Length: 494
Image 1 (cartoon, rainbow, N blue to C red):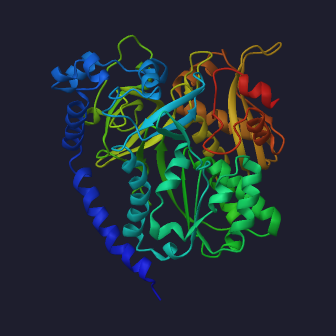
Image 2: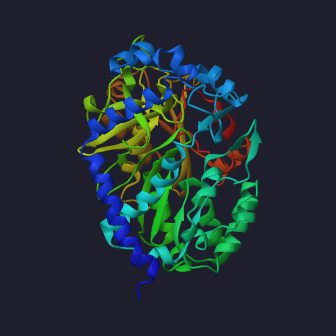
Image 3: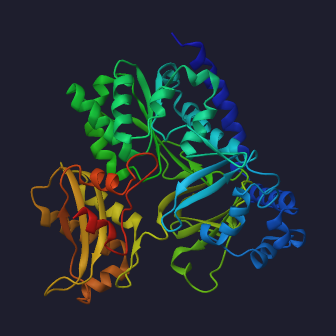
């Protein structure tokens, strides 16, 4: 019997699908409208006056007047906003600060405004509705849903609420879903991640869980604890669990491990949320990439990643991007971020409509020898090397070994296996061949005997969790970088 809730979900999904098609089919016009709207609304702000917004009439004008900035460069303005000053980056003052742990700058305070908040909430909802529209499956809306997230407890600073993005969004769960969602408010407020996951296991075990959502590495920890408690596969504990929603990292390296933990395949929806905005979500089950949100008060620019560190790299808009090129994504938004480098690199999988995958972080690469290997390449290598095998990888990261004794330098892969390969050097060889195929610089360095082929170092079980705990980053939205240009992470892992 179709419940009222799932019966109503289908027409609602159809309506949302139609409204998304409207802007997705007119991408350039949609972005031009967003751009003009942002400039007009912020012309009277301190930032708008400092950058002469009133005389900006085109993208070219904007590029001349507003340089690309990262958080450090925008910080003088953000500090004024945090101090409670009005009309600095956007009119009035923000309703929240999403507090994130910056790698270089300590804590970052990312403003969320009355205008930008709805896109954080609506995009995740729309992703589920697009899934319902495409598959016709709405049964899961009657079951229990879990979203593994940060604490919803917010502090206040000069009249602005302050907290982690996932904790802020927790305050916006629509009424019709409140009864279905877990964990309870009390459990969500537990700060210690391991204690919290144990409490979530207790709360969810007796429930009919249909949707499970979170960053794969932390959902994996939850699944493992469920299995330890019951000795059963997750799919046997929750018979109606059929939809996994994730974001923040590439799921592919985890997929085999997850299917083993669950005991069967489940549908998945990928999201691309960040404190700076909700940028994209998967709109089709069988298409690669996520639909870029062009109608959410965010104006996008792109710079080719391999030109990014040049003196004056070319900034382009959506209309000039190409499929398969690695770009640094730059945003301007109704949260008051202007030509802001969020640090991610993306690659377009399609331009009709515009779909992206996250290919890595502009800071996370290895170029100790000029090879410029990026996150997407090491993840793809791992995927190819373990496909159609029994090998299951829990977690991995890669670092350069620059000064090995008596031999050529190499890339060192630190891998935590759930199911180890019988032949470690055969796996290393497959990984190396895949990297050489994908990256011509790496190929040349191996051929020219500047580097020797990569080596794998096994990490003991639980080693990555132990590392994250030791640096105070266990749980929440924290993720292990796939690769680094130095050995800071791996020295601690060792």
